Image 1 (tube, helix red, strand yellow):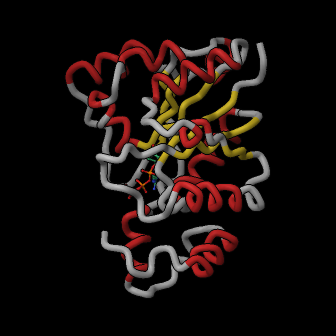
Image 2 (spheres, helix red, strand yellow; image 1 turned 90 degrees about the horizontal axis):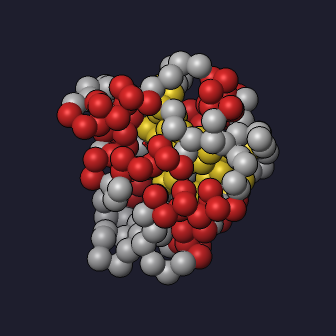
Image 3 (cartoon, protein in one colour; image 1 turned 60 degrees about the vertical axis):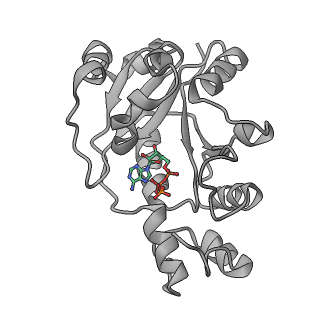
Length: 215
Ligand code: ATP
């Protein structure tokens, strides 16, 4: 069995410390060798991110200066079609047949899981590791509560011994940040330097990405 890796998918419009700090805390807590940031491809019929795919990718590459154990996995951007998380995890599993996969997800995303394509099968391909996010409490109902009951564990060793199949709750330091609030502040001319890595803040300024954004 290879060392377990972490994967954090998102729109990252822009990437911020609400993504990065819980992800790094999780990486250290679980002893993950690497953590991959994986930007989403947004299908044309959905509201588009303000930053282009190339800009979102560039911002993630800049994060690596501050987070040397992180990698950027651009597989969802490489295909000009929407990728469902289940398809992405299937492709990762095919590439890494002996590597436990820990798919990181914030509490808000976990609560929305039942709207994801083939969501009940996600735990066939990866472990789910849930981060606390201010404003979202774990009030699980119905089939989601059932999935969590069946798969949850507090035993970190299982995340390394099994390729997939567990749900683990992080007790991370909550970070009250969202990309929506950052875009709003940037559009209003307010600095976000305390909420993103310095290289990302410089890039946003140089490219003037969010200065006229409509939220
Ligand atoms: P937006 O405000 O545009 O909806 P966002 O800040 O929620 O964006 P996403 O790129 O949609 O960021 O999030 C990607 C992943 O990161 C999701 O799993 C989400 O739950 C998680 N995440 C985002 N912000 C936080 C945060 N402050 N704390 C914990 N998890 C977070």
